[in-house]
Image 1 (cartoon, helix red, strand yellow):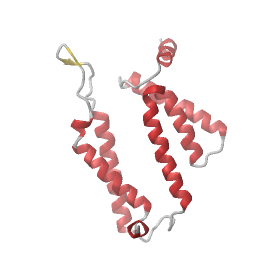
Image 2: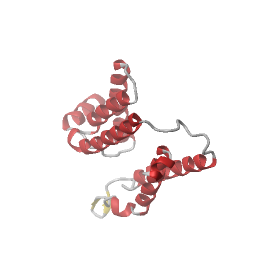
Image 3: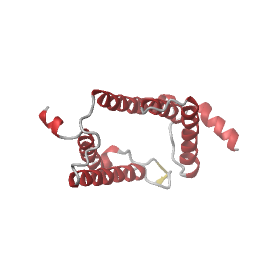
Length: 170
C-alpha cells in the first residue's frame, strides 16, 4: 500500500495502460480473428486488425508521452492526494465501460453507446438533461453511420435499427 501512496493514481493508470496496450499490440495476431474469405478472397477491403492496431498504437503513444511529461515535472501534481470519491468515480467508470463492452452485442451499438454516454456524462458531473439526451442520441447515430456507410465496418446492431437506417438512407 505504500507504493500506491507514493505514486499518483494517474501515473499508475497510465503505466498500466501503457503495458496493456503494448502487450496487446505484440499479441494482436492472436487477439483478432482472421478475415472471412469468399472463394479465396477477403470479403472486406481492410484487415480486421487495422483499427485495433491504430487505437492501441495511439494509446501506447499517449500513455508514453503522459508518463514522460509527468516524470519530467513531478512537482506539477494535479490535485495532490486523491479522495475516496475520486477512486469511487474511477471504479464506476471502469464498471460502466465493462458493462458497455458486455451489452454491445445483445443491445446493439447505438443503444449501448447511447446508454453508456448518458451514464458517463452524468458521472462526470453534467446535469443538463437536454445536453445529455442530445449528445447521447446524436453521437452514437453519427458514429454508427460513419463506420457502417463510410468505412464499411460491421458493427453489432439490432435488426430494427438496421432496417430503419436502410429505409431512411435509401
